Length: 53
Image 1 (cartoon, rainbow, N blue to C red):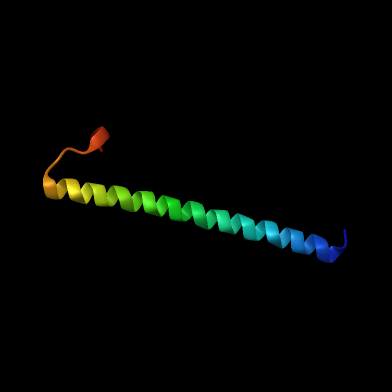
Image 2 (cartoon, helix red, strand yellow):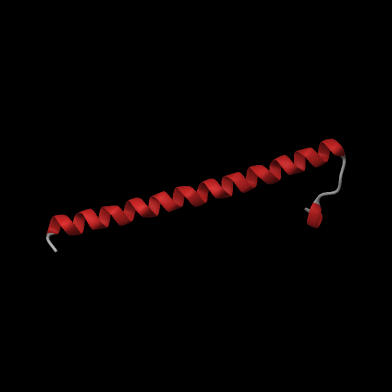
């Protein structure tokens, strides 16, 4: 492999890592927002949260 091939392979793996990092960050954000909305709905309706949260 030439130096340019190694450099492009290295940058592709870095891009893939940041891509998956962004996906997992978005998933955590969505889950957090879901539970925030669930909590707000339960406060409005005065119902008990599941699992004692």
